[in-house]
Amino acid sequence: MMELKERNCVPLSEGTAAMKKEEIERYKKQLLTEWLVIKAEKLKKKFLFENYKRAMAFVQEVALIAEKENHHPDICIYYTTVEIELTTHDAGGLSINDFIIAAKIEDL
Image (cartoon, rainbow, N blue to C red; front, side, top):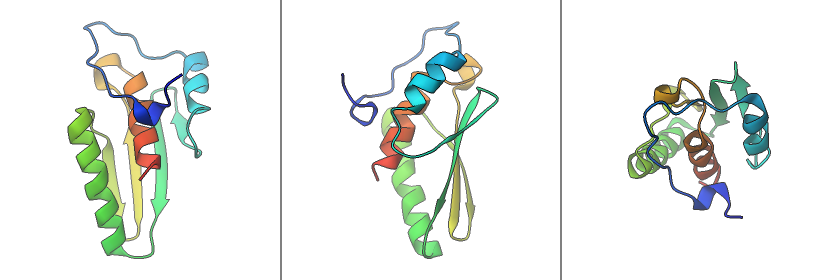
């Protein structure tokens, strides 16, 4: 089985349903670090850095991944803390694409 970080996001067909809780838990176990699942609709994680410059460099790396995969997280920067939230708006919750991006972010 191919690891999440080695996969690429896929376009979702119209009407694709969000993942069910069981599927979310299965994919969450494949992530290397703990991500918070919010209402079975979002993945969220805080990343802490030694300084603002490193936090901004991380955000830039995340942006490059997001553009390449055409799946964009919400990103908030609080000086040395970066919060990332992933969701698939078209599905109204989580999709495989959110877990793929999470795994690629973990790999930075």
